[in-house]
Length: 93
Image 1 (spheres, rainbow, N blue to C red):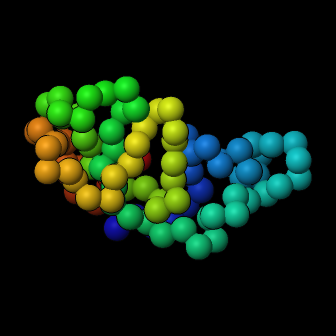
Image 2: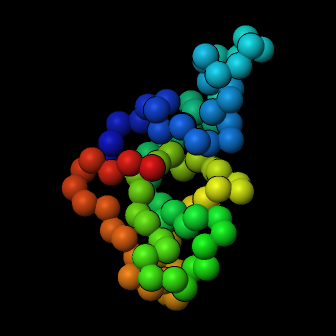
């Protein structure tokens, strides 16, 4: 499993709150401190979930969310067709 890092926040709606991404003086997203690295199944927002390869296994933070871009599932749905599994320890979100 990968080590937690703020690079895993890229694309997340709340990455705005990490240092260098805002002019508000906020240096860390409030979720990062307690975030855990986990495996999720990523589905592009406007992709039908029953399309071949629609789901992709990724390693990300459990708080990561990208509404309007991707949905993240904790468990692969039974109706998923030909999901794309991550290979090796170098998985990325």
